[in-house]
Length: 115
Length: 112
Image (cartoon, rainbow over all chains, first blue to last red; front, side):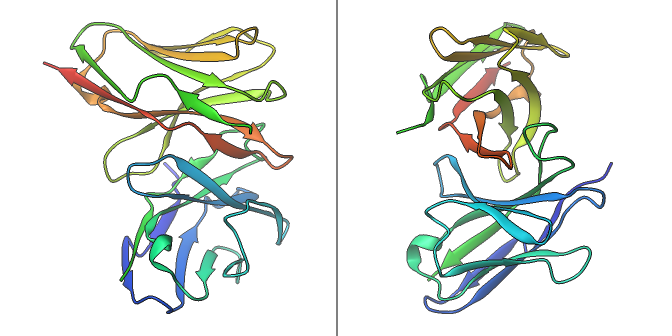
């Protein structure tokens, strides 16, 4: 069964450092998303990406965040200068037609720990 | 503001009993709702969805009910099994690209 894969599973970084979280969405999907989940809290939307550009973003997704689809398979989230409060699980998701029409499939997540 | 929330943070049921997990939403313009299951250390897994033009939808052992009058969503799990133990989130779509707004989650524990 096709799945969304994320690497690494766990990333530890020092405050102020840049991190890149990687995702390989399901191959025939066109809509890509990043969500985050602070420990014990709900999943929060960060950004959606379609047709090689950001389509929507939340207020969490400030200038420190960026996304990129560098090739035909990868979808990355970059945090330019990490803060302690960026520590969370980061989930990538993809859907075939946009989640209003088809379900979004989530990856296993990357646990980011900022120290 | 617009939000999706849950009435109870935890629910404990006996194996074999039926479970009911509730969710309240505040955005009356939302037209698509989804229930996700999240097991420890994993990403959310789609369970079942429902559109606003329906009030009930059934899957395998799961049923979702939508009451638009009171903006309430529920997930019913029949014959709950130990493998159903997880955190359950309701979510609604917002925005043209289908980005999801999640509720806070209900932790379901199944006692053998």
